[in-house]
Image (cartoon, rainbow over all chains, first blue to last red; front, top):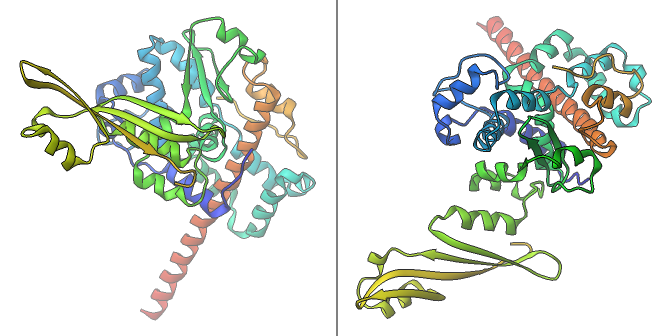
Length: 305
Length: 72
């Protein structure tokens, strides 16, 4: 498992994940849908939602998962089961309180030694009741669940996590594209199932600026070439996108084909092509008039961008 | 909601993770449970760091306020 980010950057990432910044409009979900789902108990708190409320990335991902499940025909009851699974606490609070209560008991554990030292160093600042209040706060609670770990992991580990769900609401987390070789998933793969790649949801909400936030740190799961593919997909008007890989299985070329507004090509077609420096252009005519104009563009991708 | 209650003092065992997160042994392989355990430790560390950061800010604010009160 790759651990490419340093402490300070991890805090930056954690703040980024838990900061409530997205409106429903930005998520692309109607207020009515979210209100219905909230009333049905699909959210972590029972507070009624409103259009003005802001959501953090963890909530964003959960809303997108609900949306996909509903479009797959999964019932509200089944989604509630998925919620039980994903919103299961990983036990952050219990672990910390347990260490505070008995630090010596954890001193021998190498994976926890760092955490024990951290709690011990600033012992005068750690007031257990305050810590509990902090951990239970609305912003941070969700980050301590399995879903929180999953999304945090999707950013920091180079693993292609998938959430696999069937129509009955049984769900598992797959640490890669789900397949029958993994016995743990066999029962779920015998029924119609939906595999949601967590990476694709994350790519959906990251803007260019936010991608840039982590770019230099080499901590994001997406490579430069993958981000270029996403940028192309976001342009709109695309008819097709072809990705070619080199011998090292890295993306080397992105070829796109897109429709062009015919009005733009008024006048001499040759002038239009010269003006726009197009690499390849296809057009169809009917009765001497252009009816369809398409262009193909090839983008070479270097490994380092 | 379930969670890791009554943690064993010296370690978080894989069996404990299994018992609490996947008692029917149908959701996670051992490797995946180890991953979740890894998330737990990392998230715990981040939460403590964020908490300490917040506490330090509060302490600084409170010191500044009392110093202002004295000078005022």
